[in-house]
Length: 312
Image 1 (tube, rainbow, N blue to C red):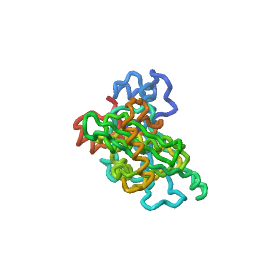
Image 2: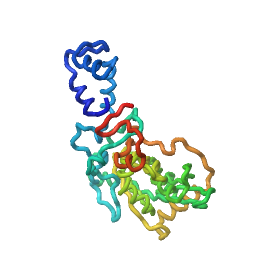
Image 3: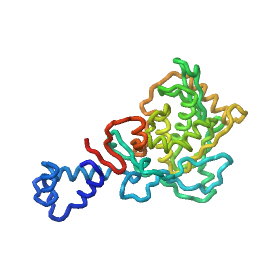
Image 4: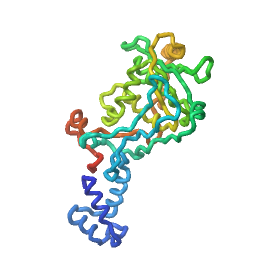
């Protein structure tokens, strides 16, 4: 059994004559024994049903509205100039882009992201948090480089933080991305979050390319694990998450303070944190679209796709 359509046909053929035992004598079980040489047809049927249940709505052939999981609504409060909402839903355009290859079965597949409930504008404004983020790297590009992240909310705010980035890739942009991730993780999911960063790389990547990179399973992306984690945490939020660019080193107080904190973080002792890139449960998509698999992975054997189920 290799194709989803075959599994669907088989599961749809179950009728009242089938018995929940491997020596069932119904027509379907008899056909499985003779045509597929299956010695345990009932167990195989149960396994196929479990695998079919793990196909997400995004890849489910029954689902005619295969939108990506970005479900956040437009905010009821007014956006500032240059402020952009993270994660807008888009559709795939071709069949080859719609087919997704998995290199392993995820035992806990992603769930639908949190959906935000609109409230009046006054309540939205009260629940909106504005935070400046920045990154810094000492000896950038060298073997002894050290990266830090800075998050600034306001003068003497206890939430202000400077963090040494415990990741393999040590660079300014890694620090800026980690600062954005820290800001998202540190705020309650129901609050509206305005993140102000001087990194066009981070903002453009999160707004324009994460859907494509996720479809390619983040292959070839040096900061793929960071983008993957940020995307999952955004999906976990009920409140609106926005990004706004500000020019760095331009006497913007919040940016200057976040930059100082990032510099302090880069000088801290490196402490490896196992949970540094831990994502919210079941909000990380897995898999690589077929076109990318063809271009990058050659003939590697796929295990699961949107329309195709291959049991190896």
